[in-house]
Length: 390
Ligand code: HEC
Ligand code: HEC
Image (cartoon, rainbow, N blue to C red; front, side):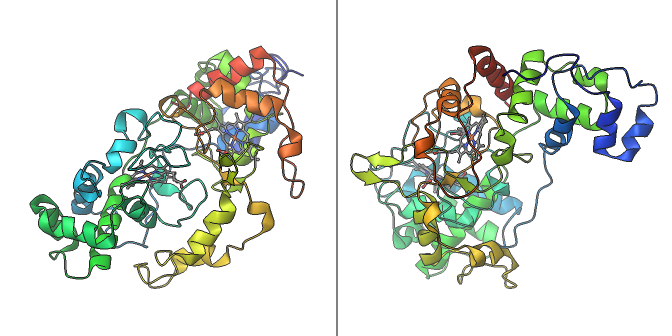
């Protein structure tokens, strides 16, 4: 099955109808006989419009008091590149999260003091997320930033060693004072959590720019057919699959191409022979047990309004083997793919969706995925579309 080709679209006037009455006024000259200049149907237009606008507004995060503060951003950037925070003095956040790779590392699985089970995700646009880590084991960017400092496989420090590095490294001590208005105190846990909050302030500034897709999306939203027609035909055909029979948009929806939820897409989830990665099931348990979650004593938002999602999370059997839906922006920088880095290329990812083993999928819940049986030309079109998200 192939998507409808040029000429099969509906009149451009219905773009305006789908996008709000004001647009109809912008398109008085378009007659009902004129087709959309693309393989897209008008039912798909609202789905495309919902993939923007980009960049989204910066949402304030009251869970840490230094969010957005320039001195905290500067201190966080310094910490991010600081190997003194690791047990062997040689590993920084930036060792695995490399700017030139969209803040990922090009490896299948993260390699710190030891090799981990999971792929290092890129950090562009990380600020707007609700859950962090492939299993959502953390509910804030600062709690997620504390984790690698203490994880024996990553940087292998302790609350005490991190706090001590901040107190005794002159540049870090000065950075702390500038960000928090006082020198680091004697409470190790407080100093280490504050360092993680400065790391969060820095990472929240890592945002990617506008892409050819964003130009197209805005043109569609305004009903500007001339500008929309500049988007490459192959990308338009790939997008038609994405918001059509591929149903990719159901999970990879919204401006950041993720619904911020967890799904099972039928990948094997062995961390190694005989040992399973429990995915979201383990993530929820870790989240609920964590002293650093948003219900805990370190959330600076005293109303606890930020903790609503955390309060309502419930552990269910279906969470086994579910992983977070990753963003699809800037994928050219972040190979290999999937939570375990098991797909070397985007073509491999698409082959997975094409050939999908239905036996592997959870029997319960809504069935979103079926093997798509994509032809080579359709895979090329999807790749052309994904390439416009860079
Ligand atoms: C050894 C490599 C390594 C180091 C060092 C490292 N990370 Fe990571 N990072 C990872 C891996 C692997 C994951 C995925 C973890 C998971 O899903 O459990 C991750 C996940 C994250 C995430 C979540 C991203 C998302 O989209 O959910 C953030 C934020 C993050 N790291 C920040 C940091 C910060 C800040 C530091 C330094 C304090 C750091 N990382 C050090 C490998 C590393
Ligand atoms: C049921 C929800 C769902 C649907 C539908 C879906 N995906 Fe995904 N996608 C996910 C999840 C969850 C992952 C992460 C899985 C993992 O790592 O084990 C993922 C991973 C990916 C990745 C890898 C990204 C990375 O950084 O590792 C790409 C690319 C991708 N999907 C593209 C697509 C395309 C294209 C479609 C439509 C053909 C699609 N997805 C349909 C949920 C979905």
